[in-house]
Length: 219
Ligand code: ADP
Ligand code: FDM
Ligand code: MG
Image 1 (cartoon, rainbow, N blue to C red):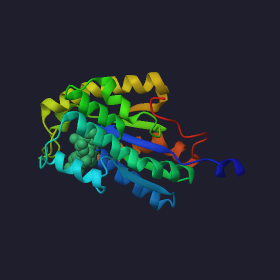
Image 2: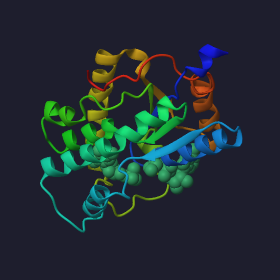
Image 3: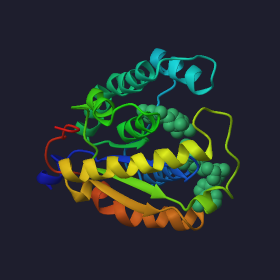
């Protein structure tokens, strides 16, 4: 119909602690959409391919040290350099699936002790996700998955602090943008079970497209 052709793509974000299954699930979702002939694009954050992304990558691998504020701003800058392409794709009817976004940015930096308001600010007015799925996994289950790697932040103590901050981020999203914008999804069970759970939540939004303008984060 003519109204469906005016609909834009959905902007879908996956968040959650390390090893909860985000990357596995975004890959499967994009593969499913490709199979179905639906236009979709995966956007990872950090996007390590850009000049800023390479600085972030060096920091995460502990090949470079950086002030906490400075690296926080680089993560945000890395989102801003991708923002125009996200907006353009959504307007062209392409579904954009992000593996992490500004919410990780806030949770990880606030967990290091930076003021919450400082952490929120640089992402203000970025494209607002239509929905963020926050994958949850009990720590005991997560610890049975493959061991933490060697990157910064991959310790039980840091992950515990980050989980607490994600709770505050969730409240902020619901308060500013509405309860429906942040949805917790259990990441327990087999990869296929989690995939079906996620598909059940997203199928309508993806196949029908989204009506209305792209929102602005925290605005
Ligand atoms: P994240 O991107 O959230 O850090 P990954 O998708 O990389 O998590 O998954 C972390 C590890 O757990 C990988 O080895 C992956 O194969 C495995 N994994 C992912 N989902 C499941 C699942 N539902 N059950 C068991 N193992 C899983
Ligand atoms: N991370 C990610 C941040 O600290 N800030 C951010 O803004 C973003 C997007 O980078 F430890 C952290 C979270 C995680 C690491 O790891 C990225 P993956 O495995 O590429 O998701
Ligand atoms: Mg991942």
